[in-house]
Length: 516
Ligand code: NAD
Image (cartoon, rainbow, N blue to C red; front, side, top):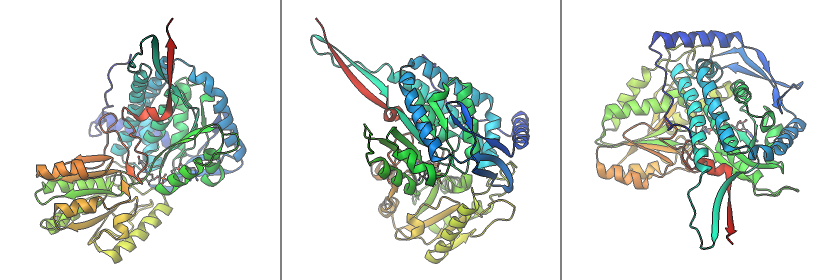
């Protein structure tokens, strides 16, 4: 049995040794810029004529990695190989599968600065955000390894007289792993190792914004000893291989994290039974958010302002858990808006590899354009408090933007923007604040700052989100402590990093033997 789980500690970059390690890792990774990465099926490297380039969003002229675009034929081969490997992998003793996942954690720990550097340079994370992403990837490995040990020794059943009863958890089959770009290591790793440790084989389709980080993790799977046929790495366009991977009759489940639009499409496609398909596909779909923080009349305004600004603009607002709506009691509204304005205007914006800057670029030119169009909508729906424009520099920089005067029916209040844009709504009283917070199709994270115990209690019972925080910000969920997943259009509430997560990748078999 493994020792108890503990979260991976974060490196403090104020310490010269940690700073130096990051500088060296950034230099090493820059030295690898422009390399070409292969599709990997059954351990074999495959190249295609059609390529896809991944760039550094802080300096888009820099080519981070060149990737293959898988064809339909390669995607089918990947599924068939994983399907053929499934029985052998499912029969591999749990202890061996667990040991491989723990080995992944060890390798990630040894190569932590290097993975951080890839996250800085391909995803535009600042050093601390990158460190949190890599640490979370390590946590997922260590946590799911322990959860699988637990699932392998399930609680005893009620024993019928004259019978011996048993419950075993079995893997499902081939899973398609479709992660987003915003936690390109942690989410990709978490979804992959959860499926593998439970005895499934996987086909990983990385996000086209961050495929190099995916390719680097596939090196880790190989080094950790996973048999080559148990995993495939298949980058490619959603249009050419996305639907195909989901629809294939040998696909047993899809583990998706990303936008509502794509998640719902995958859910619909997976529900259509294909000729030769022998099961109902499972879909785990973790999707978007429109996360609200309520600031009550008697809240600690300094703590609330700090929490709101950190949750709204950390990683440029590109977290599913980011605060995109702040609902402020009318009695303190103007003072609070002034406080968040001052704090927001003090944020620094620049290249993610320079630790002096709090905010880096948004992920792409397309993302910046889409976010800017929401800012224009915000100007008409409400009043701009600060920001509203691009920020100078070579990268895809945007000013952190606050729009006040936003009401429940406004698009800025309802639609996920996924960038550094915060909508401020004024509430008449706590009742109104709670109603506004729940006026959303989404239900991922939420927070309330209040010193009224009765209001905190009502939030516990009535604030309809998968992850609720009282008197703290709504980002920064930790594996094991804050199992993560949302309600309604935020997804299937799979609770990543929680004790129930692995059940989604397992099926239970009950065995009753008549005793003679
Ligand atoms: P996205 O939906 O655009 O893409 C997600 C993944 O789906 C990518 O790998 C993409 O290549 C793939 N994809 C796109 N079209 C496809 C298709 N037709 N078939 C199969 N795969 C397809 O999302 P994104 O921009 O990468 O990520 C941002 C979104 O993810 C936001 O909405 C954010 O809230 C959400 N998110 C949610 C969570 C959560 O835990 N709920 C965590 C992180 C991000």
